[in-house]
Length: 224
Image (cartoon, rainbow, N blue to C red; front, top):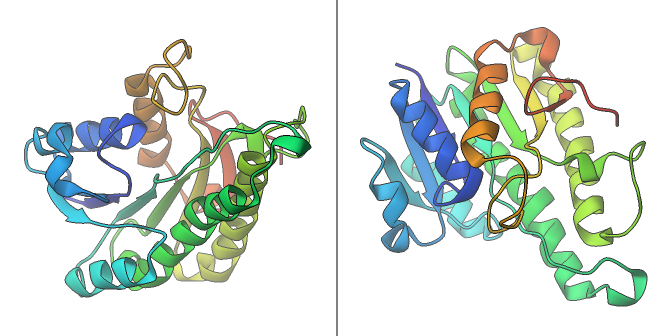
């Protein structure tokens, strides 16, 4: 069976993606910062769990060394943060830097270290949990830190798709919906299971024509 690696797999969308792929018979590698505390992820049968902090280059390099030579059919870059602060006056510049580190630099670090693992696989897929809040065309203002990080992620992934598309890479960005997680809040309309199932369905059928595309979790194309 194919192998998927999911970052931030200990909760929310990442956890539901781990459950969905495990239920489908995939070999699932889940990463999180504190594996010992990832009780729900441990309860998902057959998941291989590794420590990973995407903001720590040494941690990313260590994971790459551990997984050296292993084929990864799908790399799902899910880990991210969202510091609150909607207006110019509310911006915390230290938190803005941390947001960019986790949401942009982190996924790129992971891609860099695991690119050969993905390109050696049959599927050669990467999925990125972005956000419609990163769409410039649909911007409604506010949330400077989070919005700008997801816009930057989309550009980085678009560049990645163009650099490695000729080698067979299919890199896809997703708006997961307003999901009922710690980040999305308890009143969010989309359940994590619904979001994960939609993302998985799109990736299950993804082809070269989807490389570099930005989709809603239900497969609807989104504006940049």
